[in-house]
Length: 178
Ligand code: IMP
Ligand code: MG
Image (cartoon, rainbow, N blue to C red):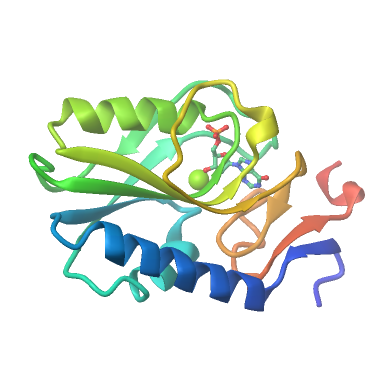
């Protein structure tokens, strides 16, 4: 195991089980809808690719890149769209897939943006919810795990672009961040 890891917060089996559960719920809820999954890169990639395989419905996918964190662990509060959607979302039932909702500033902006592009509905599925740090209001339809106010990595989440490929969610040793 990586030497920089302090503790594992959510292990592989717990994630697997939760992703199945979320996929089932989404399958049920979107039966008669026109589901479009929108992933916010890059944090969503691992979660999204596991999740869509647990959704037993026809669906389409698109991706956005927005600026949130640079290489530090603090949010700038400024949201910028770096890569926009490729297809029209008019009439689509959009489900945003995110790795983590922290301050909520990113998603608060994205939800408004997608609604302004005439999606029929816009909902959010996030693997992790760090509710303690919320600054902007966001309604989360599907949440994998509620976590305490700690900076986590793994299963798509990074610190300075590293650790995304760890198969679990963990906290790094404090000296790694300094
Ligand atoms: P928000 O706008 O503050 O909700 O930030 C959302 C984004 O910040 C997430 O999509 C992550 O990319 C990043 N982020 C927030 N907390 C963490 C964390 O604990 N580990 C890694 N990335 C994080
Ligand atoms: Mg992200």
